[in-house]
Image (cartoon, rainbow, N blue to C red; front, side, top):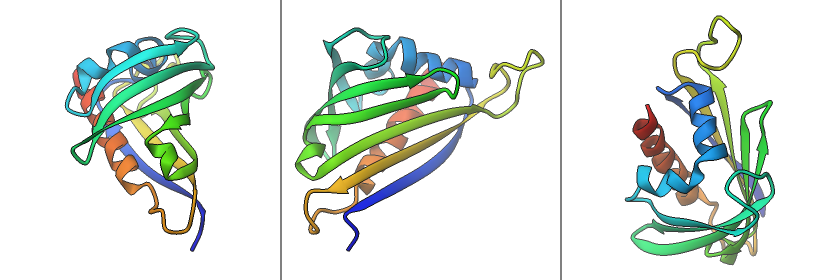
Length: 157
């Protein structure tokens, strides 16, 4: 049984790539307002809301149970890529490595070449390494991220 793996999903959303990336890059403190059924709070542990490398604490519900995750958030503005690296929390009880990546690409490119066209494609990737062979792959975490992201993009559309 593989100890390391990668799970992926892709979704088409209404907001432009620039708008979606802005929510993650500049206003992540509003995310609990956009998906309150999934995420109940987020606070800065180290750094600030916008600086790559800042550390945040997230409170959320997964399978009806409250969970927490302390993560480091990295940004690649050129690729519109947000990487969340798990540091502590419930996911880290199962996985030695838990990394979620969100890459946002424009569905249609605006005349000026920006990602401000109509809609975008969001790729969500969860990379993991299990603590032991009996740990399940993080399918429930990928499903959670997809559900939360759908709520977020509908709220900002």
